[in-house]
Length: 302
Image (cartoon, rainbow, N blue to C red; front, top):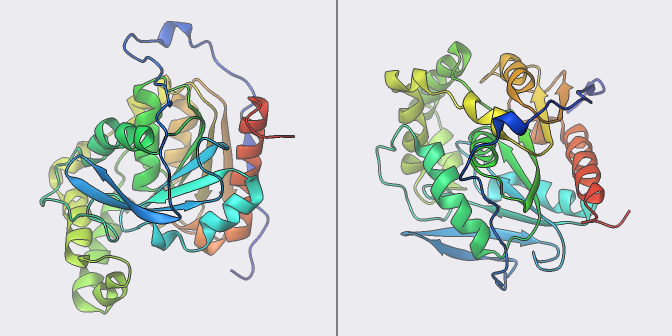
């Protein structure tokens, strides 16, 4: 995107005492299961067949970055960002479409308002085991970032060595609701449905599954900030300063609540999708974070 200014890096170098925050039941999970992953395919998780893309080395050969898409995203809608991320890091990159997205099994509607909790606490653990995940990072965008944060804050899975969050949501803001209401009008009055149908086999299922949940009045109470205090791995946040779905309050919450290092990259001229609007800056930020975290644990060669 033309006219971008350099990203602003805000590093919190200190760590807080975390011993008093440890909770029982957060045991590590082993990743011994071996799975042969084709470059493209489907995994059956519960009652759903989930499409996926696997770029680069498999989980038994190298660290893996697992990508969690946004509320209207899919494995395909990441574009070529997974390939660029793989080339920049040397890690394997695994992207998948949650139920209701892409070519995956449609979701049952209406979605429950705790659907992101279900994805983080039920689906994601099974998926990581199914792909033979051994070590690496979670990388989430928007809803996917929230799912990654819930997962990392709900258990001490020692395979997950860091989480990278693009435009995360920890609470519901007025700007979020206003923009989501606006896009509903756009979906119903323009060719947005046609555009989404290129990426989702059931665009209505995808759109209304997400949109109706966020516009439900009870969803205003949705708040996952409590999970942040229990995250035990480094966190990176990439946030566009022009994000139409959230303010810098989301970043502040992470800085206030996390007892772990938080690396924040603010991109001045980017909105809610900096990996598309400022791909170079976003790729550099995530690749640098991945290199630092994985090399610190000896998972990648220096």
